[in-house]
Every structure is written in structure tokens, then in C-alpha cells.
Length: 429
Ligand code: NAP
Ligand code: HSE
Image 1 (cartoon, rainbow, N blue to C red):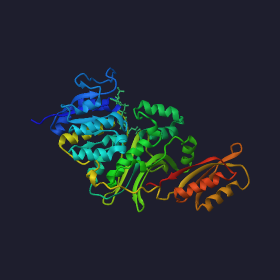
Image 2: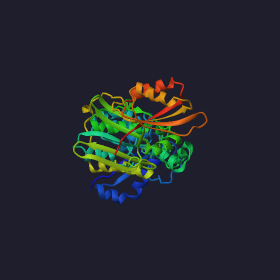
Image 3: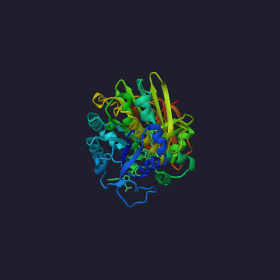
Image 4: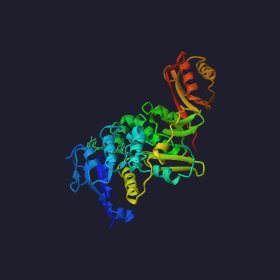
């Protein structure tokens, strides 16, 4: 008879409780699919007494996740605490040293320490799996490492943070402000322990860095991701973008260019009718382009209890079935160090500014843009509000550097009030 696969689960929050629930409710199905029982030996969290809405008395309790990771009755350490360092990293390292495989949903830890952890695991003959870390319930790591393994990947892009997409789409749909929608995202279990990771684009940047590594065979380099969050996006921008036929998304793009690896996660305008433009709520979408396959689009719940636990179970099932792949799709020692390419690819931009009500104001802005080599594609001026009028400009393709120079020159004129807003337009299909 085959032996059961015994788990030790550290972290019993949104994701941890979801995993315990599936293992309790679907034990027969899991056994039928893997040929082994999947059991939980022990669990750990900060507070032993908290009612988590799921029975835990069948499992041993450990206050210390490191002790849990080293237990003799644990084959797989399931890390669902979060945090790029601290107990999550200590316990993961302890698990590898103790000869355990690791399943984690922790993109922060892997984005910062993935290369070192992968080397440690692979030299010890252990695996680290992290399907839940990228785009929640969407099986994107499996798609890249297995389904598309025969392709030279040319570009990976997508919306990978449920919180940001929820806030941006609900602002437009309900006309509610940022703060009310932030609270709703929290109730839905989308938020990171530190929500700045979400709205600052950092969480999605972590995910993009992991995707890049597998897609391009490079060492994870989160520091090279150009990051910008959604905190400064206003209802005014959402409305103006809609008026021009776009929607605003926190969009990640990774591509290998002649000048190196470009990785950026920033608010972008995408055509309102495109699949990315139509993406609502906490849903994520990842678009992968390969030389042989063409374009693949994956769409699904990017956060929340059920979807994330589903992804954790997919990793556990692979381990139960005996599938043993390197962390980043090829041995960690063979991953190259990519040269970072900052915003290498020019793009059209949306500019919104408040123009003072003076003769020649618009001409001055057009001249400043022209002097910086920025060509105007479309322009729209709205009625004056007190002393200024909102003006929207869509540029032709330009580098961010040239645009920043133009904006700096604009600030020196006396015709633009406050700071202009510039958002990249991604002409996705
Ligand atoms: P969460 O609800 O905040 O739960 C975190 C759990 O970890 C809690 O049970 C907490 O214990 C426990 N914990 C924290 N520090 C600990 C420590 N020092 N020792 C022992 N236990 C500790 O977080 P979550 O949303 O489930 O997220 C967990 C991980 O999944 C994170 O890496 C997150 O980025 C990732 N993730 C989350 C989602 C999502 O939709 N939520 C989606 C994808 C990936 P107490 O309960 O006692 O405080
Ligand atoms: N905080 C993350 C999000 C959870 O909102 O997408 C999923 O990684």
C-alpha cells in the first residue's frame, strides 16, 4: 500500500483555512487522483485559540513554524504565512534542510530569495512549488513550466493583482471612492497583510518577477521591475480614459528586448473593448506569447480563499504524484542573470493636465511637447472650471525618458496648473 503524503501547514488565514477545508472535504477525490491519501499532521499560526471556522483538533499544533517544518511526521511543508523574510523564510529553509518538499503561496519570499531557496532545495533534492503565488487560482506556473515548455517565450503580460483590479473597476462602476472599495477588497480576503504591497504594485511586481524567471530562464530579479502603484489614479482619470475609449489597469509586462529584460508593473490604459479592458473585479488575466504556440490567454480568480487554495492543492497533488521539477523550470544553477532594460519599448501616452485660461496656453504646451520630440496624436479640451480647463492628450509612441523631459519643461511654463498625469497606453488586442 502506498504511504500517505503528510502535510504540515503553517498559516491558517484566508489561504490556510481554504487548504484545510479542501483536504477535509475532498479526501476521497484527492486519493483517487493521486493514489495516496493526503493528510495533515500538524498546523501552526500565531493564535492557537482563534476560531477559524474549520475543525483543527485532529492535527498537532506547533507554536513555532520552524519546529513544524522539521517534524518527522511532515513530508511537505506548506507555507501560508506570508512575508518576504522572518518566519516564512526561516521555516522554508528549515524544511529544506530537514529533507521536506515545500509548497508556498508566498510571492514576496520567492521574489526576494527565490534563487537562493531554489539552489538550496535543488541541491538537497527537494522541490519548491508555488502555483498559488502567481495569479491566485489561475494555473499559470504549470502552463509556463509544462504546457509551454517547448516554446521560446517572447512576452508575458497581465493583470495580476485582484485588489487593484477590484478597486479600479468598482470605482468606475459604483462611483465610490478609493477608501470604501479598499475596505470591500479586504472583506473579500484579497488584501495582503500589508495592503501597500497591493496598491503600490509591489505584490503584482513580485508575481511578474517570478513569471519572468520561468519565461526567460533568468534569475528572479525583483529589484529590476519598474514599479508604480494605483494610489494616484483618480475617478477623473478613469472617466477621462473611458471618454477616450480606454480603461485603466495595473498592467505587468515582461519581455526580452535587444537591450535586456524589460519588466514593468504600472497603471496603463488598455482599449476598453479588449479582453484586458473588460476584466472586472478580483479577476486576473495572464497573456503569454510563445514562438510556436502564438498567444495564450488565461483568465480567472486571482485571489480569495477557494481559488488560492485550489492552486496550493495543485502543487500538493503534483508532489503526491511524484512530479519533481526545478523551481524555475530549469535547474537554478543554469538560470542567467539578465541585464535590466528600463522602459526600453516606446509607447503612446495619455496626458491629463489643467491648463490655465489664457490665450496661447494650448499652443505653448504643444510647443513644449514638440521641442521634446513628443508628437500629439489626439487632443481634447473640456469646459473651463474656474480658471483652468482639463486637457487630455494622447501622444504618438514616445520613450518615457522623452516624455519626462517634456513634463519637466511643462512645469516651467506658466500655463499648466499642478502636475500633469501621464499614463502609458498599451495597445493590446
Ligand atoms: P492571512 O489571512 O493574513 O493569514 C496569515 C496566517 O499566517 C495567519 O493564520 C497567521 O496567524 C499566520 N502567521 C503569521 N505570522 C505567523 C508566525 N510568525 N507564526 C505562525 N503563524 C503566523 O494571509 P493569507 O491571505 O492567507 O495569505 C497567506 C499567503 O498567501 C501570503 O503569502 C499571501 O501573499 C499569499 N496569497 C494570498 C492570497 C489571498 O487571496 N489571500 C492569494 C494568493 C497568495 P493568525 O491567524 O494566528 O494571526
Ligand atoms: N493581494 C493579492 C491580490 C492576493 O489582491 O491579488 C493574491 O495574490
